[in-house]
Image (tube, rainbow over all chains, first blue to last red; front, side, top):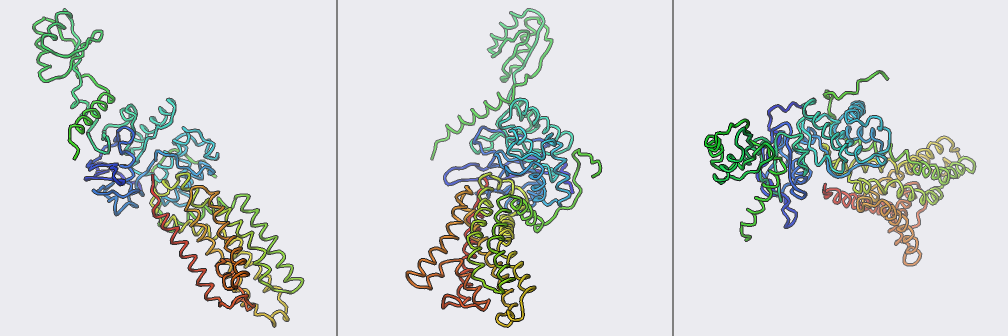
Length: 319
Length: 268
């Protein structure tokens, strides 16, 4: 029964727009997602949750189309939901139920037989490490346990693709690491594909290879993390042996922006920077011991992208 | 139970269809609510206060009389319906569980049918099941002289059909009111008010204006149907067909209203 995704296009949207009256929650989003772990990154209110709900067919798009695993979200939402696991951001439990009853119930609603549902419920609870609490009422669970239970319910029917909406929300650092480890295992050990929405950059950096960045309802970047980092001109980091001062002075006279950090010199990667770095080494007779493109964090990248997007939007006159 | 490796594994079983999902909602909700102490207490109370005297009356005094049963059971059925029915939709909305329901391959129709079915069967426990028990007792204990004065078969059929009609109309009203609010307490008060005060208003207007004004009472309409079908004298000139039309109209309007609300539930 398990669906093997392989290289199948998991998600594809064309000009997807969702409006609530005059407010546009999502504006003409066109993306194609096929990676193992894709991060949906954006600040609060960027449209991440709306995007996931549109994909699941939970809310209808105002215009545009979305397809998930080849099924149209407008006309084949039930087929999508049969093959997708969804972990919502908000709390959505039936408090008087026990963990095991809750999971069995939602397994049955996914179409599992009573016997399969209870077996899968045990397996999913064991996987997320709350098997010992399975007979306790959900109302007595801690926030961390509730988050794990939400993840477990997304796994009961063994979906190939899982949508995770802010899975680390409300967790303490220990709980957050535990959740991230579970998600890593999902991708690496169980071959699940995930689309992971978050505004926490570190979480996305830890799990995902691909990123879609949303801001104010618009898709502003998409690509692999490596590509985005590279395109985003990371600094060039050099380490030299020789006359440090004269090398630094030569870089200054070449009008390069740089910061000296202990042994390393981190130089802004502007056009022609690489040539100037090499020429400075030749002219001052220093030995270049190390040269690499520095890794600006996703956080730097994110802040830069959001800021430049906002500047662009401000430049466009409002009609 | 044998030793079972709990490790996560690929699911290779069969996936059920739409009926399985509706059945899952019914079974889960039914067992969950049926296990509540309040549910059991109210069912027992209904049987002790309304059904037991009827059995005693039939068995020892040899009298079969609808009016006694419907008068005594009314208030308990109304309380029971308000208590067990009020959270059926309102709690799902309050707890935001609807987002999980509809992230499954489940349509809003399936959800609606599953919830209605649950209410119908739960309410049947204080309407249809007592009627069934009482029918069995009538059939088993009716003497020849009783059979000469009343048509036993007609009485038995009437009792059971009216039991199902009560469950139907009460379930429809309950699902409507429960879907109107996220607070089950408000829903409970609403259900009680509609069911109980429609009867009180019917009685008052019947006395003050005209006896036909009693038709605004849901319960009195059921009473008229029972009396007419059972071969007893009704208190109104209207025939059972008018009352039955009113009951069906209330049921359909309530279901349409509830469906309109459920269809518009936004998953947020």
